[in-house]
Image 1 (tube, rainbow, N blue to C red):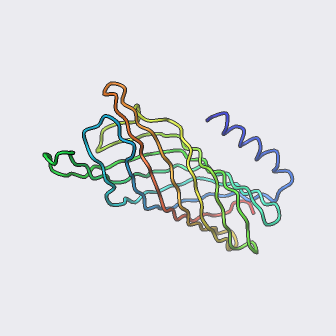
Image 2: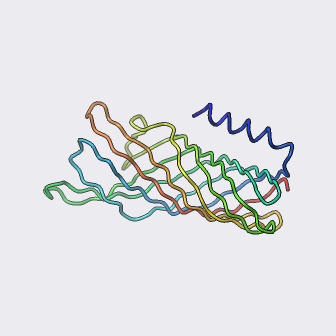
Length: 200
């Protein structure tokens, strides 16, 4: 994934000379959940429980070509969700566990700007896992360090202030070779962020 990220940076740098450049910082909150799918060799049953509040902070660059823009970002993200766990034979009581992820996310969004005020955008997200915990237990060693996801949403710009509302989905595999078990974590977020343009 490092090579792909470097390629993305090279492409952005190559086209920057022909673009109107804006750059700034951003931060915000999210409502996030985790759904466990494709369970293998595991005696438990999993169901999505309530959402949790996540947060993020980072920086962005926007390369504007008329109404079309390219926006790479670098975002530190804390997210996760609660999962309801039960036994297949109902011999154990149902309980809820916390899943927490800390990530470095690099979205590369393509969008269209209407009147330099309203935006629509979508694109891939390169996600690097910094930490992963299940009910306080470290599970990072069993998970993919790098994965891809998707973001899509809308935004508004008023002067130096920028605001966004987005949907994000990133799937990440967990594999335990000792127990020969595994599962997929489907992490979804609805994200709200505010930013300030340092360069406009």
